[in-house]
Image (cartoon, rainbow, N blue to C red; front, side):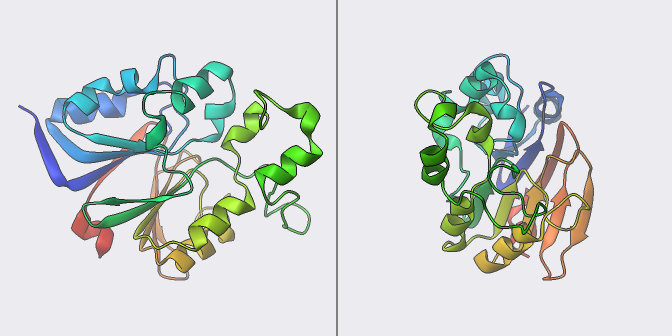
Length: 232
């Protein structure tokens, strides 16, 4: 028997083709009403098909991209052109039962903006700026494939004007040695209470200097949180 828990959100990290965590949740019979995926799907079929059993069980899916979702054309299309394309919440905030969740997908890239390279300033603040200088690199009349999952400064600027309780990101904040203070700062400006991230493939919990809680997840991992825990 499957029970859908209306006050729980499930966070699923970096499947890389292994959706065993989803199967485990389904087998448990305790399905969160809302499931958030942190990117790096490595799909061999459209996302809505891969997650059909979870959706059919009553869970509403939202997601952000990881860097590997722009490694191959098929991986890109199975996510970004899937029937769940509109559930990509990178760069925006959604309300889940009163919990405001913000998404920041993708990773920093040195030829666009990498905070730990050079002076840390963006080489191209917007996608339009990048394309104006790199027309020959266009793919499908737009950004090169690999930059379809790149963080631009305009993404930070858009989110900085919004409020959220939870930030899901692919990149890590400064709580991890490979993380970034810029994500800490963004979360603080937005009023975030908790950051949940993937990418690093390491499960841990921490608290940032600004008091924001962090949960990093392992490869193909998952985490369940109640609304009350996320808002505490």
